[in-house]
Length: 174
Image (cartoon, rainbow, N blue to C red; front, side, top):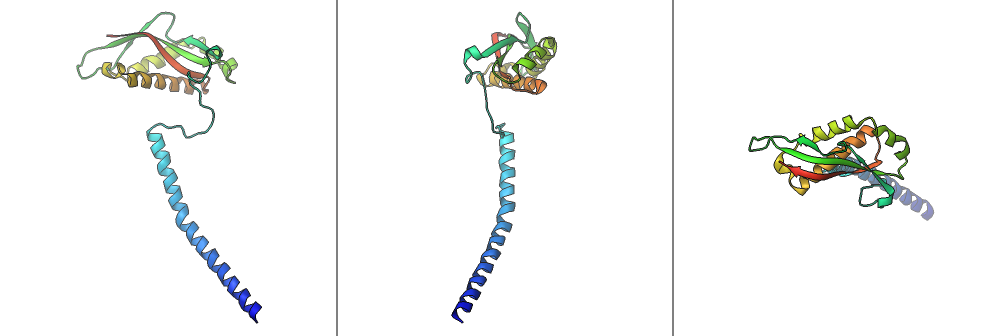
């Protein structure tokens, strides 16, 4: 009789354990989903990368592993800026170039695609500069934002991250 009573008690405890586990799952899973959704929205808002994988930039790749392609032609190019608070026309004169990762799997197939598409790449640069005012572009943060904006658009165009950085050289503002 004692063994039977112990078996019934164990079965009752197992049943209570299953019920409590189900209650915990029912209450925690929706909360976890809402937390994940909130975290995703916050990361998107501050532009954090949510995907895992290799992240390259010009600082993590050795110089001998990079190649530089000038986007704005052989000479400096003049870009028009958005009108600011002073309602005056302002311009930036600079040379825009892209840093390519030679060891990327897409380098050999996609680098030849850059040639012949210089006007499209220049248009990306022109449209990007048109989004920023004279005051915004003169700050380090503004220049970094322009570089990352151009880089993002070019990476989307080629559907690859073999282009790792955008450089602005010989820059003058007016």
